[in-house]
Length: 390
Image (cartoon, rainbow, N blue to C red; front, side):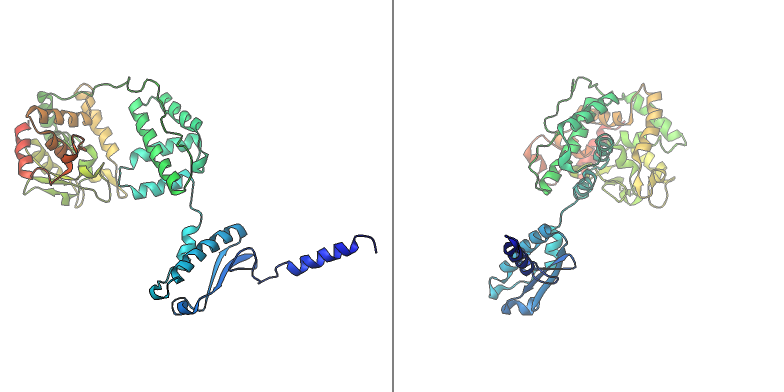
């Protein structure tokens, strides 16, 4: 026998003796056993908790020993807390605890879906920003995005001809999604979109034009005398101050012609921009005449059914069609110019700022007290809108 052989055999015997066999409890993971390569939580229940839990708790954890150890440790803390006081024994959802502790999805696309499902906001801007960003930076784990990716995104938008205000909105959308992801995944990482500078930001702002009273009357008359339902949007927008999607996405149940009212509220086809967008507005003058004509061409559910497809409101299509006409007839003015014009008309009749915000569904920033109470009555709104009608 060579020198050192006894040491070899002693080591081999110790290894065989200590090696866990199939179905035995693994020593380094408490209350856990391994069978067929999978770890299970296996624990005897104290006598005072048997009635609620049974004699044993046995639950599949994971094939990964590190992951199984983490699950077992978490489950152990919860169970010991639940069993600590026999007088206030509260059964816990053991399977639910393990499921809640499993790693969450972390791709940007997946985290963004989770974020948008929680937030009651217009999803179009963040989805546009995401689609563009992922196309140039890829759909990766949220922790992997860098400052260079953010700068590349800004440069890409600038080369595409986007105005700096649009670029800033896209940045804000992505920044909000990443902030949510970092918080939910408990990541200590600086948001790559934080304090991101845009060259010549604000220098490309141009004042949006407004319609004169003569242009409005001329356009309204043409709309009412035409056979185009799209042109009817001009008096509907111009005399209510609504956003285009708010009118295009109206259900017939939102319209009360008997009392001359429309209810701007969210539905299955389109959301509203913010909470203050939900409101009730009177139909006066040209707006009522246009609504009556539009309803005569509607279906049984939607005011503009041609823009509701597969349960979604395609307000952009309506905007393109309306703007093609407006730009040609009114020197480049657009549908959104009607909303700017309407706010100027409210100012001209000395409408209080809080009432202007209430009518247009603008978020009031004038004071904290602006959000107190129920706001102006519908009679006050109707009286004011009669004063500023064309």
